[in-house]
Amino acid sequence: MFIKNRLGLTEATETMVAQEQRLNQVANNLANVNTDGYKKDDLTFWEMMFKAAGNRMRVGKGIKSIIDQSQGAVQKTDNPLDFAINGRGFFKIQTPQGIRYTRDGNFTLNSGGQLSTADGNLVIGNGGPISLNSEHIEVGRDGTISSGGQVVDRLAVVDFTEPRGLVKEGNSLFKLKPGNQELQASKVDIKQGYVEASNVSVVRGMTEMIDLQRSYQAQQKMIQTLDDLDHQAISRVGNLTG
Image (cartoon, rainbow, N blue to C red; front, side, top):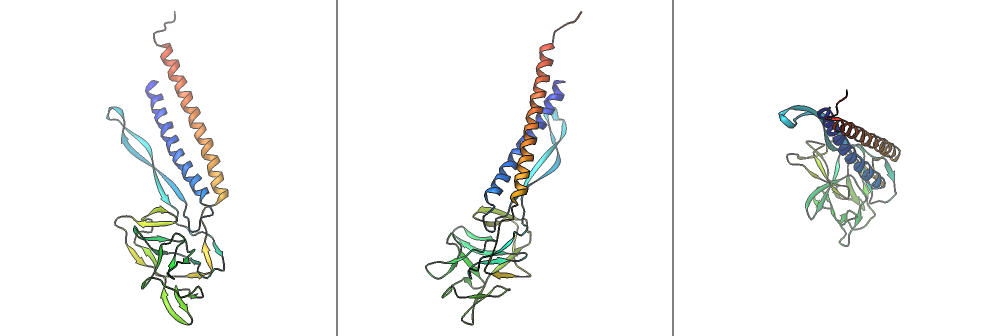
């Protein structure tokens, strides 16, 4: 009985660890519900074989964190320096750490007249960092930027060989995983005066959090029950009945 209970304790503990990780993710998603361009985190589960004590093989549950790249709602702001990508693609951003990517098109002009993010990182166009004389610009659906009837530049909107091959860096920025490559987006659809909101659903997030908390508590009760069974088995060892 002790061996069986020990396996049950291991399974319950592993499940609690996975649920705790998922609970942290859901809480972080909800905290970023109002962050423009934010992409929520999810977990995937799969069965895997691994060695247990005594070189025995057993089935366990693996977990893997993934980013949900589905598009968030496009919200109107009427700010001429706000841009939303309708469909696939990312804005290309120059940071002190190198090139990064974002779906957050809430841009502004820095003191040098360059288009930048709220954190001061430069927005890249086909000709490099985009310089503007004023905020009075027009941006076509293909990303072409015009001012006073003259074409200034074009927003560099990119895609990737592996859409899931991105790593979060905070502030709605992503970097490439090794082996992933940048591509020019095949179809660009830019909406000026709009931003893409977070793709987090508050209702779904709260429901997931409640379910996870209940499941976590159920695993705690299971561990307590198995521990009680072990205690009873140990206390009865050596007792003889006539």
